[in-house]
Length: 161
Image 1 (cartoon, rainbow, N blue to C red):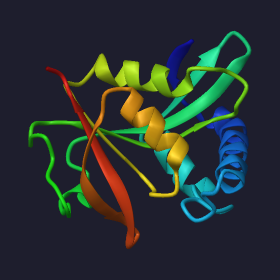
Image 2: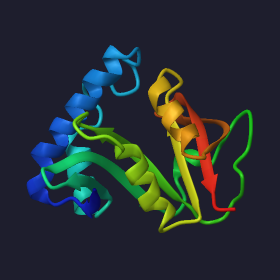
Image 3: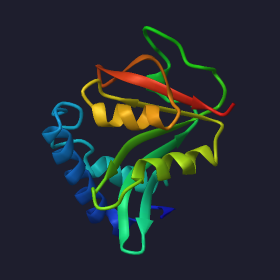
């Protein structure tokens, strides 16, 4: 698999991946994190325009998507019940999703990010047990609780040793 930046022509396929991910989250006991409305088409268009949207592809095309941000994440400024591992520069992964047709989507995204940064931050909803397992399996440490749109999220960080 390989990773590339998304382009405008990818938008419908990206939204289909997010629809599959929304359905999976709802069916697996996490109906509140994204519901059926997040992320919006406008948000993904903005991610693509700002070169923040990345696709995870094989020979058949895209199977996963994520947003990658460099620099300080405003929602990570305040953390409860813990602290970040360090305050060094970091990248943040948001909105990672898979179409369920290829294995290793999360690991592929994480390995890509580990190749470009010594510090990665990510968060997930308390009800997103599948994501928590994937995050922890890939070497991230729980750091505390942050808030996204007034909703608590488990905050994680990976740092290169």
